[in-house]
Image (cartoon, rainbow, N blue to C red; front, side, top):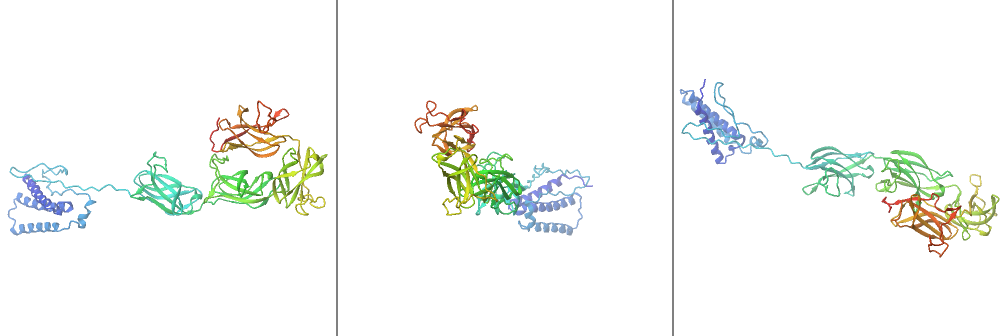
Length: 595
């Protein structure tokens, strides 16, 4: 049993501490790190051995044995001091945990305390007259916090009809946005979609884009969220994030497997029922198929539409009025972006584009021989026929009425092959009857010379002579209106006005369903007038307007009403106004009217 010896702790700590303090003073690398603790352990073991032998009174140890112990200890110290500061053993210090200093084993019945406090200096146990050892707590090294380097990695993407793009890996040092741009000749173009990003590692982020605008390659860019948190504001405060002076982005290739939107339609003959067949409409999402008239080679006025579904729509049929048709028609694909199953143009449901080109198809339409004419008076010895279809060069011929049958010919006008519009036919006014009949004739003789009955017979279609088209010349004055947007020039268009005398077309606002205040007017000579433009006061306009005909009975082209003779034209004691006594207008940009 070894008794407690208070001088042991004093000698052991003091000698070791003095030796290591000297190493620190001369700047030797062993004053720190793993070699520090190895050296201290060797010194401690040596001194402990010496002291223990002294305490246990091992006095008869041969001199040779003492020399062996001292020599081995010196060799160990020399080996430790010979290590290079940057040796592999010492270079691992930055990441290894710092071990506690070793304490020599104390016999079980010893009363020596083994409690350690690394950060507090131990109380002195030196005997009277001995110096207190200078014990320095070893410096503990800590690993610095990891710094995030922002990066974006997308890789090759396969895009389908759903437009889903998966960004494989995003590292960000702050919350922000991942934003997908089009590739415009190697430069970033329009924003196609975005998704939020959290600080740190983000895997498999999904961004939805329009596959029709994706092209063959895209850019993905990391943005900040510097504005309103959770709201993407770009252009604005949510700017692209830069690592140094380099934008954090990735450029990646696209394999586009989305349905390519297209319309396929053949040239066709349209029968009297006006049915048109569209062979195929392919689209990535629900939309609208619209038939539009030709306007100088471009889609013009809409005459029919119907919904289409995502995918392939085959053999679609629409009905149009042939009297509204042009020889060339356009089938156009529109989005259904607003309220589902409600066609909202022009403000919401836009034309579908693929690679910047509208999805449409033009086709020629051939109609059966036919005539469309309005009821009208004979004005200045003329009647006006809205449309006539001729197979080859022909003639539009006017017959007077003889007890419900064709009478004598009182006028004719030449026709070109196809659809002819707004045909002015001179007639013998003195021979006209209240009812007149129109017939189509061929031009089989000298072209441009009407030679009936020797040549230029009546047209035969499918083995039959079509029935005559009859109209009245005593129907009086009338007009036709339609709902429409108000133009930026505050103009309203009245599609048709027929008057047999000089007069006025006057527009009034609405007052609880009745005619209110006058807001615009236009003077008209006698005859048939199409697309009459009237400029109105937008501050007085209401959503519902009334169009009314007035007589020009006083000074010509000077409106004198209500205190004058330019009274409203009437039939059967009623004002002559539009068939529905009102029509609706809205501003083209859907802004409210004056009231």
